[in-house]
Image (cartoon, rainbow, N blue to C red; front, side, top):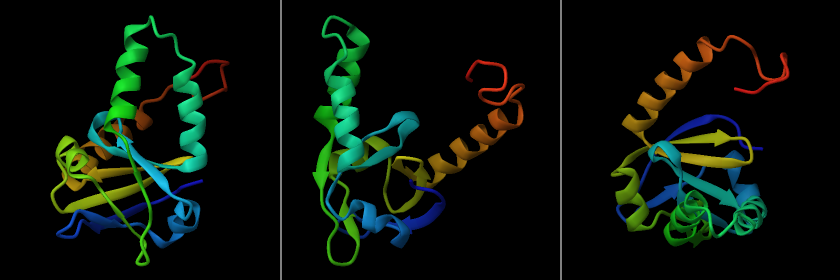
Length: 145
């Protein structure tokens, strides 16, 4: 699982040094896709395969499913860690997420999120406010958030 928050920068070629703790799980390659709320999602191949299988089984007649499928598959890119532990972030994904230089890499359980620094700070603050106002923790009353 991926945990923690790390501040990094993109180099002039759009490469991102991944946190050392994350590298062994990405050694076999990974997929970078648009994420929600403006982040990018980095999927280890095994996790992406599960998401691929889930998406592939969504009904083709459902517009929301088609839009999700298009966003993930058309916007995604296969990438490989280089010898310095970097992954290239394709230009179209940097533009989509508003990433220029300063980024925040966050562990998100089975996947990684990469945020433009300012976008992460706003999302972190909103998530913190939401978390502080949860009335019933997950599972205690039989429902989820």
